[in-house]
Amino acid sequence: MVVEEGGPGPSKPACDRCSRQREKKDKQQDKQQDKQQACEGFTIRAMMKNSVVRGPPPAGSVKQRPAKRTAFRKFYDRGDFPIAVEHGHVGNKIAWKAEIENLDYHYFLPLFFDGLRETEFPYEFFARQGVHDMLEHGGNKILPVVPQLIIPIKDALNLRNRQILCTTLKVLQHLVVSAEMVGEALVPYYRQILPVLSIFKNMNDDMSQGLLSLILMGCSVNLGDGIEYSQQKRENVGVLIQETLELFERYGGEHAYINIKYMIPTYWSCI
Image (cartoon, rainbow, N blue to C red; front, side, top):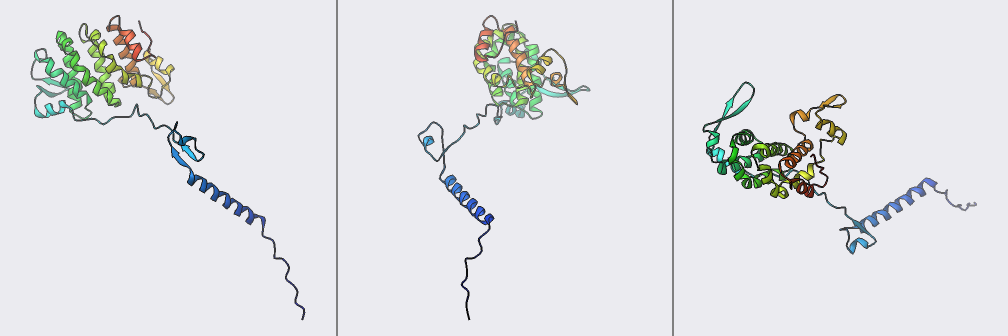
């Protein structure tokens, strides 16, 4: 009986060879990735072969900061303020239990400004409305208290909260025109007030500069199916900042513009 010698086996298909080569490449890439080390930029390790430079972390300049308990809330809960809520047909307002003109502005006005950081009812309502009432009836009592108002204003702006920013900007506009020389008295404190305004100056709720110019002219902006009515509610941060800076320049005297320009280089004179 003759036994035939077995010849070479059938060749493996090409697809199997390709898949093995891919597996080898994937393993090599995995090994290279395992060897890669993350490092900071502009260091010696960043120049090494298997180093991966991390990108810079986000600055967080517009990130909202956590709010702390205010002195206004403490005094209100304790019943130290001569105020109560008066419910009306149009809306609520403050019923003062004492004449506003006879209040000690050195004591009460800084406390109400401190309450601008509040966002809860009734603290936010009493602080906001109380500030406007006292500025409206304060007269000559406001100017001597201006230095005491800077820290509460700075603390409110530094929270980067949109609601608090809008409230504080409206209060600043009222403060500037509340009495004579108040606008000039604020000029030395621009370094405490303007940095946050510089950050949010160009934030106009995702609207272009063309739309902003229309809003400043008092026109409603067509946004397709809807219309931008934030200028009516005065809740547009960018527009409020522009209005505030213009009031600072108009009422701040001859040195106001150069000080605003120093802190906010993109600001142009309105006079």
